Length: 434
Ligand code: PMP
Image 1: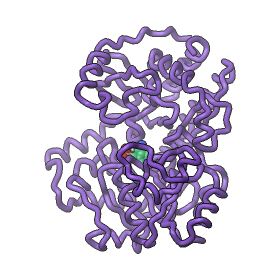
Image 2: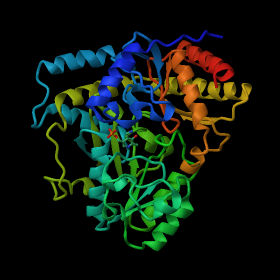
Image 3: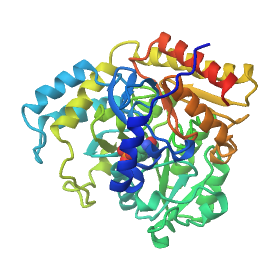
Image 4: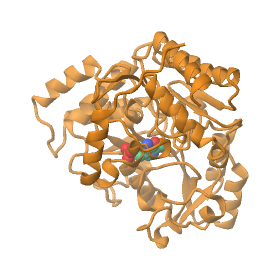
């Protein structure tokens, strides 16, 4: 058993106290404030490979990976070298750049549904744009999303994930007009019958279905056998589009994403995270006949000052090149299996109800006896136990996502020894501090 280190957090606390006066909640994105695990965030200083260091000099094994992009390990020397070269030629042209062709071709070659792609700056932007395109292509306004699935923070996706209220399309946040979300219908993940009913009740009104093919934003929830295939069939029957939001799963659970992994081909796909190699990027793409509607080829407007900038394209290209090396996904799968199965084993040994799993380099672990098939199931988790577990793991040098409702990520830089040490930490924390 490894000894608990008393985490030194003086600098983190000082910087975060100052940050709270400067930025809402002290952060640039809410989950970073550690609200659901006790509100004592760590302020970070640098990253390298599988590790992250905070401003007090503590080192952690990192299973957040900047929420997904760091699949090759942080600060990969080849990515950094390519970025240095690109920097010398400038950061942004606001005009066509050859590197866009290179990354576009790589995305088109990799992702089965994508014949044409548009680059944007974030996953949120990609999802906003894809919704406009779905509506324009079908001439319909309603859209189905799943409870607990996150598609960025645009108004029409911020719909409460609680069943009855959710289906009424009530907004999740003040400032989101009911008129905007009234066209957003929701169903529980893994529930095809609920989707069928929505299509029956809204005949010829539903533009399409958007889904995280493997949920990562309610914790890790895999699709039940036949669920994605069922969505494909139902959408086709009703002349609606199927959109896979692969911002998280794209190039992570397989090079060609969930659609390659499960063999279900959507009409449109959104991407982000990994394809930017750690720089801000998003993308959406699909069949040529649909993508040709996007301006200036067509009339569906969407634009961006920094879209397709040479730095982001460079980091993306180099990251995808690294992922093409043989054995990448087998390595991630083996490593993550060891972690996910090890965590469940330890929870069992130490008498904690737990449920979890992994697909390639994406994993999750709930303090919940499971099975976790949807957001309602996920919400049954013991959140205060997770908060204690999270703190205990930090004290043992392991940085997990600071919320029970977030998936975890491994990278090519993680080693078996890292996983062994992480499991040793988990065992110590499960025995003593929770
Ligand atoms: N879709 C999914 C599936 C995501 O996981 C995220 C981000 N976690 C987004 C969209 C939004 O992406 P971004 O944070 O880059 O706007």
